[in-house]
Image (cartoon, rainbow over all chains, first blue to last red):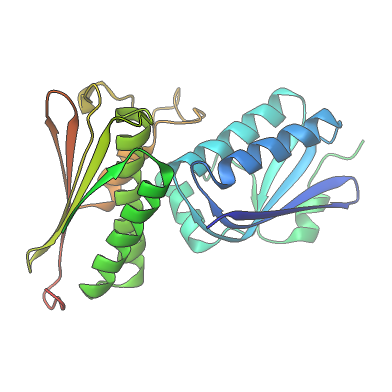
Length: 116
Length: 138
């Protein structure tokens, strides 16, 4: 019932591979802590790979939004990769799909970040 | 079938799973099962988190009924009550980037009918999904 999360670096971009559920009390806290840790380490170019996320509730959606605004407010960029159809539909319904920068290919997602 | 549950995330998960099983048994498709179970989960989260505020002395009840033409789920809490008219619109531009406030919106998006009733104290949410022409497992 919980979320799996792993971190890797590609060309200066931090990719968080998420899997499972992002819900109240489960994945939401893990996601928040992971993003906070990355920002504390100065890693502000973050790509959330949601390809293995099979469930997200309103709390999880809220956490994605909070992560997005927190990273942006610190001068970073947070983008989403590989949305499942369910997550895609939820972001459409909540009008968040156009708020996020959503990618469906990792290589082009990496290339899309502003490189210093 | 009615459950009386403590105000915990375990209770939320139990209610969600029960809704999923009920919808599956009723023969609705996978997308509808997802919508129904998510709406019920959101209602349970509201009851436990916003209604009962995780108070160990307060209970949530959840009842599940398949009338043959509809799935009817009622979730009650013992909190201070909820006036849906006061909830901000999560789709309004000024609210889009808020980190919360989408639960009731999703419930309304996914169910055919949603009714609020004040219980003094508490709130009862009734969620209804109309079944198609050939429901099974009534």
